[in-house]
Amino acid sequence: MAVIGIMSAMHEELAAVLAVMPDEQRVQVAGRDFWVGHWQGHSVVAVLSRIGKVAAATTATVLLERFGVDTLVFTGVAGGLGCGVRVGDVVVADGLVQHDMDASPLFPRHEVPLYGRARFAADADLAVQLAKASEQVLANAALHLGASTLAEFQLHAPKVHQGLILSGDRFVSTSDESHALRQALPEALAVEMEGAAVAQVCHDYGVPFAAVRTISDRADDAAHTDFQRFIREVASRYSLAIVSQWLSQRALG
Ligand code: ADE
View 1 (cartoon, rainbow, N blue to C red):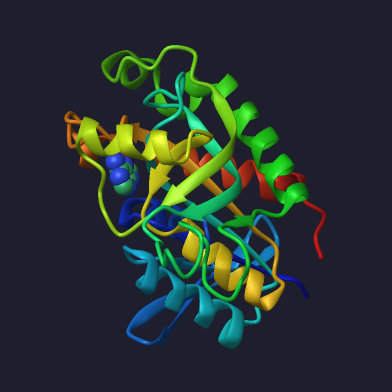
View 2: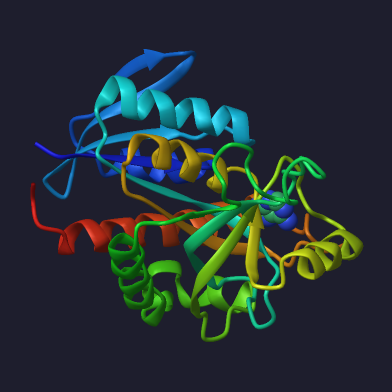
C-alpha cells in the first residue's frame, strides 16, 4: 500500500494532524517521533520536520529509508517575497532553491554542486492537486478559521499562488534582506528554512514531493509580529484543511 509522508514545520500543525489520525503509533528514530497511522483511509506517517535544512533533510531521509514513504507533502509557514503575496495567502511550490547556497566561483551562485542545478522541482501533479485543495479551503476561509479570526488578522480574500519557494538557514526579518533575495531571485514568491533541502532528498530518491506554505509575514522588519498566534489560529488550520481536502480527493492506493 502507498505510504504518504506528511512533514509539518510547526508543532501546532503536527498536533492538529495527530488529532485526526485515529490510530497513530509512535516510532522513534534519530531522536524524532514518527507517527504511523491513517488519515482519510490513507496510510500516513506524520512527523515534525524540525527547523533548518539539515534537520529537515535528516527527517525526510528517515521517512524515505525507514518508512518507505512514496509521496511526501510538507506544510508550514513562510515569509512572502513576491509582490501580491500577502499574509494569510498560501504558496504551493512548483520549484525550490536554497538561497544561501553559494559555491561560486567554482559553481554558479545557488547551484547545488554536482547536481548541475539550483532549482529542485516539486512534483507537477501533486502541486496542481494541492493548489486545487488550497483554493477550495481558502474559498471557505471563514468556515475553517472563523469570521472573527479572519477579521482579527485582517485576512481579506486570501489567495493561492504557485511558484518558486526559497529556503535557507536564516529567518528573514529585515527589509534589506528580503530586498536582496528579490534582487537575486526575482521569481521567488516566498522564503522559509527547509523545503529546498527536502526537495533535494526527494530528488535523490525519486520520490514525488510537494510543499504548501501559509504566508505568516512579509520577511521584513515586522516579521515576528504575533507569530505563534498566527500559527495556532491560521496556519495550522489551513494546513490541516488543505491536506485533508487533498487526501479526500486522492484515490486510495
Ligand atoms: N518562515 C516564516 N516566515 C519566515 C521568514 N520570514 N524567513 C524564514 N522562514 C520563515
